[in-house]
Image (cartoon, rainbow, N blue to C red; front, side, top):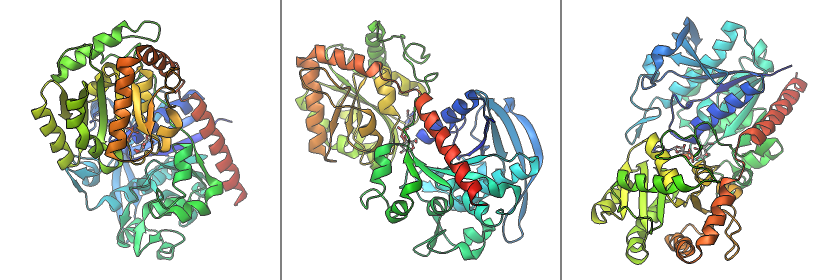
Length: 489
Ligand code: ADP
Ligand code: GLC
């Protein structure tokens, strides 16, 4: 029998997106729909979502019972996403805001309540429609209370038998709030203890999910190992070691309908591994669009990223000036995040016209143009649970330069000088020097060993990053979770 799967997520591409979580939820849902499963994605109807006029109203009186005797009335809208059905929770008090988690640099102070509400509403939706999934797939801290409801107040309801799979996309954000959020959520105060929802005197929604779910996944095998150490575990390493037998790392795939140089509608000319002429056209288009000197002689390094500590782009900002002074390279940066880092790239652009270009903001079209038009792609991340852009880059024949961590280590294999083996350039130390030297290595390879660059491009473009293998692994995890949960009754 085909499984019934409920994905609960704060983001779902193309409707709402801050980072790769949105892509992952959307692609995985579509993959399971292709397998014939009944897949529903439950996510907020943010007021910023475009195309709402095409959604259909499914319910206009879903009542959501929170703690403290609070009952709220919400609506649910629906649309299709490649065979999966997306359910949008409309509740303006929480989701009619300019941002998903924050406004500018400031997180919404009621985020605990906003996402406890999403979790509770997803379960109420199942109860009121009588649709009971086999598996509820939870994504990051925002959905951490779902497994707690299923183990406590809803344990003896028909939903209590549902298995939960909790995916860690990024352990750095844990959803730490005052204990009052647990009361608002309607979860018994007895759960406010170190082996459930409490950490250091506060509610920790990530921890709550990790303790209470049936199985845990994260988005690469290396990150699955890293998070069991104090260096990467963000304080939850002993819990993750305790649950190691239920934890597995599965690499994200790439949605080849969106990211494919043969069909990409955002790039100047399509190309493929057997006909690379279009890549040079894309490089010229990118140089023109970003105000870089138009030249096919200089290696062009691209960045598309959130500009936060995780991504290590402060290291790049520190060496960008000597890079363009000492090596004949160009740099194209697209990103947004920390104001000081945004300002650094703006200043570097202003004083290096034609050599460094930056666009501070979010721009999907430009991100495709950079993947296609750049020669190299920079990801010096301090940690990277999976990372999608290094895979997009390889598909576009743009060689990634990455720090060996998490999913970057699992997906990019190191160049072997003189042989053209590998698809990228890796380094270990999270230092500006290591990044500088690795960019120097790539630059020297570009000028001195062009045949190796060609071979590496071919290697990169023929890698298989489709979701097929990974969705099969998720299917095994779902079955494993269903088996474990049912044996607990
Ligand atoms: P993370 O989720 O940690 O940000 P990923 O590499 O998994 O990292 O995913 C990032 C996703 O967000 C990619 O699809 C990338 O293209 C996109 N992205 C990040 N910053 C921008 C931006 N400024 N403009 C357009 N797309 C962006
Ligand atoms: C997180 C991680 C990123 C990962 C993405 C999707 O945002 O930072 O590495 O690719 O989730 O799983």
